[in-house]
Image (tube, rainbow, N blue to C red; front, side):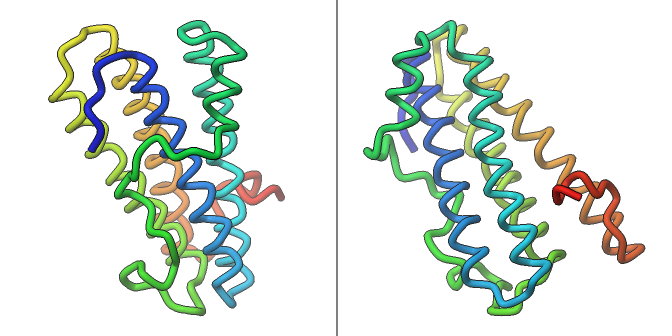
Length: 169
């Protein structure tokens, strides 16, 4: 876990988390044989890019547009985050036929782990402005979790998607 001592490090951590999530979900979409599982993983990958857009709007004034773009487009990893596995095959409960419920559950687990991860970072952080940034990130992760949980609960009870726009429908 990186030591977060300034705003830029907090933002780098958030960027890396979203980039890792994007990579994981893209790879998971390729690895699953379930059409609906593939669709959900692709949608989750796109969500990670949307999360980066949200973070950009939140934090661009803290680091500047050119610095933001440099951080997002960097091929260099800021830190190894333990949240997203490198491969769907290493995720407990995942299999080649991972379906939409499994995909949503995997995403919910990842969001919950991200919340816990950021909470631990916040507990170790001294600077109040950095804590505020981390609070904003935690709030975004909680929102992501809530959306996924609503979809999971609705789909598992009815067999139908709660909000078709979630899958681009």
